[in-house]
Image (cartoon, rainbow, N blue to C red; front, side, top):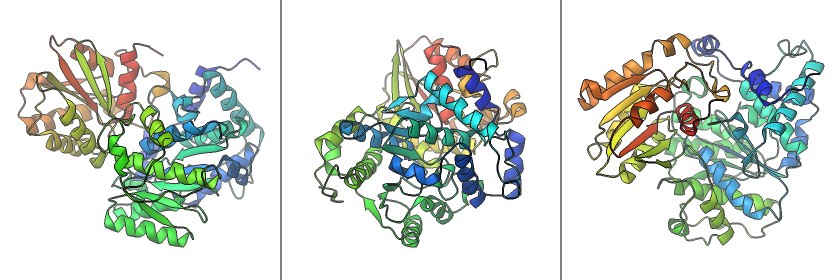
Length: 484
C-alpha cells in the first residue's frame, strides 16, 4: 500500500464532514441526538478493537459546559503536567481546533505529531474498512462506512491515548453531554461543568433547564462532579437532580482567594472561575489516583498547592483572550461565540486596550445569530470604546478563495459565503448601532484580505478579533504567513 501521510489523513478526514444541506435538514426536522449516538460510538469502538470498558484505564476527567469548558480543560492539563513524575502520558481531547486538527488530540500538552496523527488515523480507517456491524442493529454502519467528522476524531483520540499508554486523560464534551460522542466513558475519575448558557438550542433545547439536563448527562456513579459558582439557579437545580439520578454528588466550586494573586496563563479576569474549577477537578483526580491524600476544602480561603498555581501560570491556550504584538499592530484575539462569552471577551478588550491607539473590529460568525452577538459586543464596550473601523469577513482563509487544508468547512452554506450575505447584514447592523461612516465599515471575502486592510493603516492600532473560533484559527494561520 502506498505511503499515506498527514495531508492524506486530513483529506480523508474532511470527506467525513457533514454538509450544510444535511445539517439544515436535521435542524428543520427537530431531530435531536438520542441514545443511538452512544450505541454507535460503542459499536465503532468495537470495530477498531476496543470494549468501552477498556477506556476505564485512561482515568478520564470529563468536562462540559457552555462557556469556558475548553479553558477549564487546558488549566486542568496545566496543573496535572506538574505531576508528570507520578503520571504517565497525559491525554487531552478538545474541540474545535485553530490552526491544525492535531491540536484536538494532545499528549502532555502538545498536539500529536503529523507522523503519529497519520499513523493512528489510518489504523482506525483500515480497521473500519475491514470490519462490519450487525445489519439489523446498525443498518447504516456497513463495512467500510465511517463515522462523521467529530465522532471519528473522538474514536481516534481513544485509540491514540490507549496506544500511547495514557493513564490520565481530559475530555472536553463536544456538544451537550448526554448524547455526546465522548459520553461512552463509563468510569471517569471526576466530572466538571463550566458556566451554563443558551447555545446549540436545535440540539440541546431552548431553556437553561433542558441544556443543564443534557450537560448533566456525563455524570456517573462514583465520580464526584463539580460545577462553577454562579450558575443560573434553574440550571443548578437540574444539575443537582441529575447528580442524584446518577448516584453521585455535585459541589459548587468557589473562586479561590489565593488565585487572585496568580498570573493565569490565560488572560481575562473571568478566567479565575475556570481556573478554580480546574483546581477542584485536578485535585479530585489526584486524590482518586492516591497521589494526593486529602480532599480539597471547597472554601474560598482554601490553601492551593504551589504546584497547582505553577501549572495555572504555565497554561497556554491560544485564541482565548490572547494578545499578539506585531509592529504597530496589537491583536486582541478571542473565539467567543455565545452571549456570555462575547460579553466576557468584550469586557476584557474594553479594559486592556490603549486609549491613545486606533481601534478596529474584525468579526465573523457564520452560523449562529451573528447580529445578536454583535449587539452584545457593542453594548459591552460602549460608551468607553469607539471603533475607528470595523471589518466583517468570511472564514475563508486566503484571497484565492481557498481554506487552509485543516480548516476546510463544508457545514456552512457555500452560496451564502460566496455572496457575503452574513457579512453584508453585519455591516448594516454595525452602521445602525454605531452611526459609523460608510467608508469605515468593510466587508471582505477572506481573512487574508481583511488583514491586508488592517496592515494598511498608518497608525498604531489595536484590533479586536472575535466572533468565532473558526475566524480565530484562520487569523492565526494567515498571521503566521504559512499557506497549507
